[in-house]
Image (cartoon, rainbow over all chains, first blue to last red):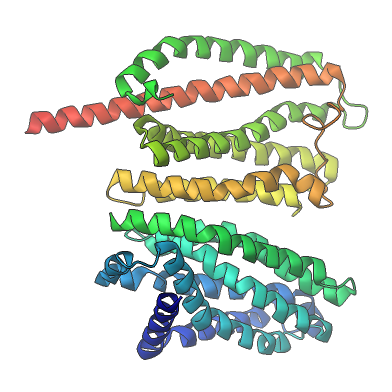
Length: 221
Length: 238
């Protein structure tokens, strides 16, 4: 456990000292959301109708943008090979790295999302579902992304490849995240969709470390 | 299964059964198309457009079945380092992507007169579209590395991860209210379609399966021959 926590602390320290990761993700998130009123027009009714979808799709893309950082730096400077020699299993290290990645990039998304929803005139009834959905959904994004990031280590055109691998697997999170908000606004309650998001998270926590660790071992061969 | 791990033995074995598979494919697809286009009755609601189903249903079945086979071959390649399974998984992917595209396009052509739209975002259609992207991602991943074995093994992991999509496709029509109709063939309590339509469909499904087997064997054989040629050239160069 202490090895796990010190790995999380190491990744967080690296992220803060190098800086810019969280800021870049938030800047991307805000700028992309701000593009939509220019693209579809500023009518509040229209924006209100599509606000939930815009916020979630953009959050998805912002999460995707930061995935390359998950293993790439450690892979390039060789520390991944040193980490693989630790007694802590590689599967647990994947979880630790995902946790650190989520704290650096996922948490800021959750904080900024309600503000952006405000700009898009989201129905006030939808905010609890938006925040709860993001809390349950963004860790899943980091975890699923870890598989793609580990698989595309050392590949040609890794960035484009990563989006091709990861985006199809992100679709369920997007569907239930948006459905939770819409259901809450329509008065049906967001509970079923939030439970499905929680189920996805539990599945991802249980299964992703094995796939990602297998991919990392492959990259280290 | 393990006997076929030897490429030479695989070439001998596949060379023997390949002509029979090819002949059976031609006969079954010919008979199936004749039955589907001329013998089977038009539907009382759908009219003649029901004949699209005789292509759509077998290609949908192949789209998922090929993925399952690809994942099984990937698991074999990862667990036992089975060299032919590696190539088999790689060579199945473009065929599976082709069947998935055929399924999506034929469904779209049927949907326009029947549902009044080319496409709806219901769970069945969306999950099959995701399957298509999984195939594309797999093909992109195996070709993204300078070292072919690294690409093949990364692809094998991705193929196994993508298996989560298969039950979602199968049960999407039961879990959600979809425009796509629920299962009518492989269901508890037996098929619910008339025998006059079930028979042509069964012949077409068998024909599609054999078509895939024939093409798959041909692709694996040519990949093995290409690998052998490369090895010989390298030997000569040394």
